[in-house]
Length: 281
Image (cartoon, rainbow, N blue to C red; front, side, top):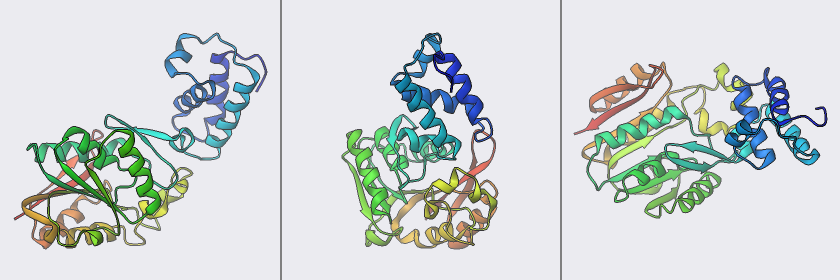
């Protein structure tokens, strides 16, 4: 990049460099420029005429190069905002998506009581578990994940938000729970088939494959959770599952066959059926 560029000119140059790599090139460049300058995006907008020094320009160029190579912005900056929380993220965990907030909304709506025992399966960064714990301080939330590295991130996020009531256990799905039962079970499991082209995009290639895909059968993890959940649910307890936008009918069918009642899918803000809920007993 040319020397003596203003903040506004640097932002334009960075946006141009990311145009082919990102659908949100301007936003990405803005976030990365704010990081390089050690300032806020609001400051960038209010002082576009400033001229960053050479060190800041070099930092920005390096960040833009990483983004242009396909590294997700969340991994570059080290955090992602989810619900009302800022969560640390690393390549050990899936980056929380806005559509997953629907799972949090439905869990809170289905369980208005002040107390509850709640289970988050495959917690990753802890996004769902910590969002629920932040909204319902008296809930006892348990979160499991097979990855020790993911649980380290989740525990750090819990500590940073002083959410000490969340319990983290390592193991695959229900394995570390023994005979424990819960009022709510929530999960955003892997649901992209191993042969689906979505996995080949530059960003998803950087995220943990095991958190995205269960293998060739895209329903494998969803089916495993549905079949194993009933012994871990109290009578009248709810199971809430995020899934792909074309999988609602298949997930609903699995739930009905397993004996769940009140099976219904919920749509996200884009009108896509992204989660299904069902009651046991």
